Length: 404
Ligand SMILES: Cc1ncc(COP(=O)(O)O)c(C=O)c1O
Image 1 (spheres, rainbow, N blue to C red):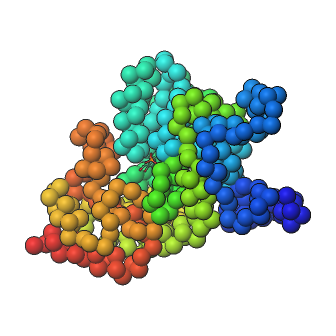
Image 2: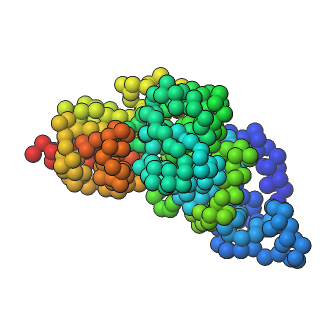
């Protein structure tokens, strides 16, 4: 390691969060590269049998096999851990891989888990279609009803799971309040921080035990690759690591490199996403054909006080419902737009638009969608970084189409 790198290491703890997101990660190799290298190798060689045995049996710290560790993936984990203020972190092949690994690692047949109704469609499918099949009891609770959480958690519960803000209804779970209830009942508290990222919200500092990410979204930021992460204390992440090694839901080195680079611009992107989303939400709110706008940055959000306490700004995702609207109207709106990408992903610099009831949450049955507050007249926009004027013009095309 060069002397300059050693000196940088010695001052790292004094650096600001923004600087750490850019400077922490991989140690420079003897090649003196400036950008972090991608270690595209499925395994690693050893100088002798004893060193190899130490790596495999005693976890000596040397990389051994790609499903177990990789320096580029480790670099991503280290950088994200510093940003989330986590002691440890693990990377997975997708956000769903992170959720699966967390539940597999921490739950067993006979356990009971309590899950917010405001979670991503596939998360709900995973627990209802699979974990129940393997003997887990699942209770669903509305995200904002703290007394319902209190009641649900008064029975012995292994794990409470939520996402905040919820997708796509933008309801906010009070992390501090729920964290306190979970602690009182000795229940693990897991928060999916995908919508906010550590730039806008740090759940581990507010009482969460584990944080989940779909890195696919804002951590990448340009809609290129899939990935996920689980973060928390060493004791809680270690079982997740163990499952990932055996289950094989590992992040690839190339994807980890994309995320490492994404983290370098996350701070500035999240601020810009929030500014654009607030402007678009404010405009949508003034349109007579729109019934309701759900956006965490609006002063009219019913949980404004909690939002101000818990989040730095509203983030990039909003949803709205059309007055007297049906599915046909929402589809007309979508079909008339042409700038916004008609796709299910979010967190991209390119704005995306979708009809949650027939896409992200389309595989759920109608009763579950109703429980989650996802109506046929709801549209979700994940606001990117284009000019807001162009986004407004695109929404105008949608509104004109439904007026005809
Ligand atoms: C909040 C949230 N969590 C988890 C996921 C799952 O992530 P992935 O698609 O990377 O598996 C998504 C996907 O859209 C999401 O929106």
